Image 1 (tube, rainbow, N blue to C red):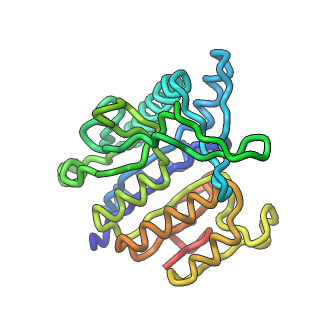
Image 2: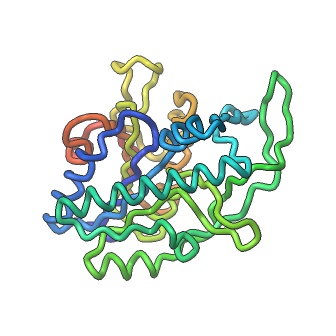
Image 3: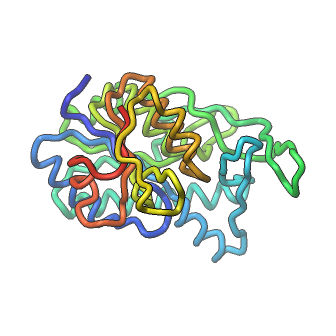
Length: 270
């Protein structure tokens, strides 16, 4: 385990304060912490799709998981949005003295995925098969590339895009990407930031925040999780099973979001 290595996932939803997050990353890096930053792009892709006349659509699996319906046009929009967020984060970090390494445009070097050829989704109460979706299931992470960047004092900034030799760039779940990277690098902690305080036992009641849960009890967390939080809990479980000692779910809308979470804020598993 690399004790000074932190993997942070910035959710792609609305309301997250990128400036505050980047300031905390700069504080941690200046103190000798090594950080890998993974980000989402959902809100930016939604806004861009609406402007271009191709609004977003959501798929719900029979088990209740929500995902973006990524048809060919949506893929183009999502790639554009993800690369814009990647550049913005790198610029924000650079303005704070962090040697950021944006990986947008080089996704084929880092993440490899396989397209989900058929998705099951509940539409109008019926289970349907979706065959024109360009989302992917992550297959491999090029660990050596990230380690080489970190060893040079760089902070990798990773978009939620992965390469498939057969299908090109695919939309991949950023939380699961972050979990896979944290496990591959042997990170000390994985922190998933979103626009909620953490895991809520009774969503949306903020007073029902779950502060801590042992890794062995994460199945209970899946029972409590609603909507997209289910994927975050699944990602937390994957990271823990991959050897990451502690995984946090915390609020990215508050001042000092990383420092507050690392001091015990949000929900921590492990």
